[in-house]
Image (cartoon, rainbow, N blue to C red):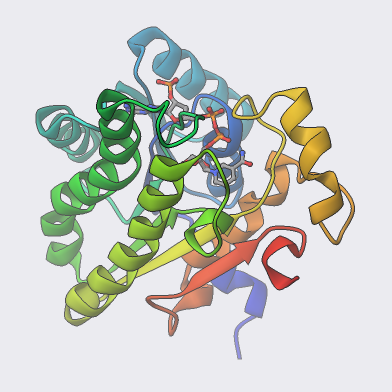
Length: 252
Ligand SMILES: NC(=O)c1ccc[n+]([C@@H]2O[C@H](COP(=O)([O-])OP(=O)(O)OC[C@H]3O[C@@H](n4cnc5c(N)ncnc54)[C@H](OP(=O)(O)O)[C@@H]3O)[C@@H](O)[C@H]2O)c1
């Protein structure tokens, strides 16, 4: 029997991680590269994406690619997949990590803010799955990992577009898991809890601490292994699942 740890290796795989120049996306890209994948990273800023790709290549001695992406734009998403295929001839893993939020009470938020959050988090995830599907289908193997949220599962005041979009990502994960299973593609979601990234300021961090059973915020590097699990052969019989990585927040 082969070593079980081998199932977590992603040598020879090509992964796209959206929004990977910082925060959780960067941590996921680092985890995949350290386990053997060639990683395509994105940022809305071309120079930022290229710099992140160069740093990753240097740190893990793997070929990488940095591409500018606005995940709300179908042409931008298609161009990302085309660039990845042109360089690597394949895409095995897609991590839909790009995301944003606006805070505010229902009456204070604007329709434009709703559109920005829902288009980035939900429509962007759908667009990327749609663009990568023919490539994965051609090899009859694929892993899609959607970065949803603990707020896919529970509510939070003053974040209605974010909570709605992430609930949508969890539902989309199930819809595509069922639809793409015959093509050998699994689709799962991570539901991160509170992680220390630029998405939260210091007051948000202090306010949420009492809600986290493990008594602390997560560090971005703590999400990487969970993403690797869902991106690798180790999760071969798992599809349509949501995996909470939240310090127990949603277990209360
Ligand atoms: N931190 C948490 O506690 C937490 C908890 C649950 C879920 N999440 C989710 O985890 C993901 C990463 O969040 P984070 O905490 O790492 O936040 P972050 O540091 O603010 O990173 C957000 C990322 O999304 C990218 N992005 C934003 N709008 C985009 C667009 N229109 N097109 C393409 N990329 C776009 C950003 O890229 P550029 O700015 O470089 O363009 C950036 O890399 C998000 O989906 C978030 O909802 C985070």
